[in-house]
Length: 510
Image (tube, rainbow, N blue to C red; front, top):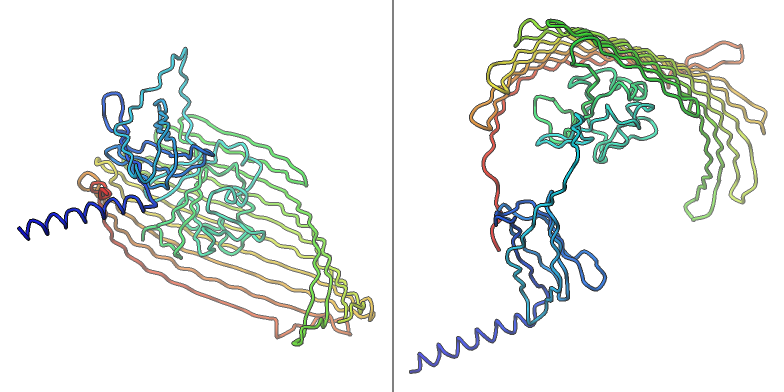
């Protein structure tokens, strides 16, 4: 008798505890399932919950593989909208959640197919602007009219998660530790020795941009952020094809590009020419104040700057695909790019003491010229096999880059009637030999085995010289600022990796 009484009391306490918990809870639940007219579950259907008072979004997401959804919200009155592509949306009104109704189960929400009578359907073979795959995002820029008058820098700045500063330095997800490739390989067009190189690559020569945030060993990523791969245009249709573009803008921004492709049964010739002239004026001013250890102003100066940046670039690219047979292709290509730039800068400094009194004016003028030449040669062999996805690709590339900057600087202290004159030269030469061979072997339904080898031989030679005109009108070198830097790097690498795809990860039911 005592045992039965204890069991009964325990059961009553358990029920009372559950009722108290339900009455004191501050989080409530909405569940349901989205199906079509045949009661088939709709995976990835969009479901959103809105507050009835102000239509603000309270919860939302997509359905799982069984078409189910499960949202946690606060107490209140809501309405729900369920949507799926090519189906009519369904709205569920008057969903009231509170201590008396902590859980609302909406059951199966049926969506009906949206049908519309069309008089005509026209199919246009054009890719979407952005494509997603497992290992990269692809941004197609070939048909984007907004890119025709721009260059590679301006196009990259419009790609999500990519930023380019005023100096031409490219960042991915906020980090400059990113590798830039052209057609999947290193290139002087991506700026091996000069950040201005991408400014000289015209947008109408670019077909698409691939952002690879998790690169495999095959790409030899030089950082943890990822790779930006710029793919240039090359026509694949048979016969003679070509295009010609002219662009203009203000301030002076003139450009033209010509691409030509001639393809027959066993050979495909391709070539392109790009010309661009741009002038970029600019100005700026700043005021800087210095404080001593006691917190008082010790000095200040104001700087006014005017600059004028001009550049003329030319790019020539050509080559041929030789189809040895239906499974073997040999590609020979070459590229030559040259550019001439001129930067004029005028800077005025006005200095003030700690009391704000004017002390002196210094005028500085700088005239800088820059030449940047790049030569590349590429040999590529590709073999495909009867099995889809199985291929062997071998590349050899030689790159020679020569960048020279010369500047004349004149500084005059107008208050003290003194002046000095300097000149500088900076030569950046770089030579790269690149060899890579990759083999891909698929297995099973989704499996893939990849192996390959890479050899990179790199030589960098930088020579920086600063000279000053002395009282005898003779140029003297300044040893503290002169430097000759020679760097050689040899890399020999091998990789082997395998991957496969299994079933979906399923969330454990609540």
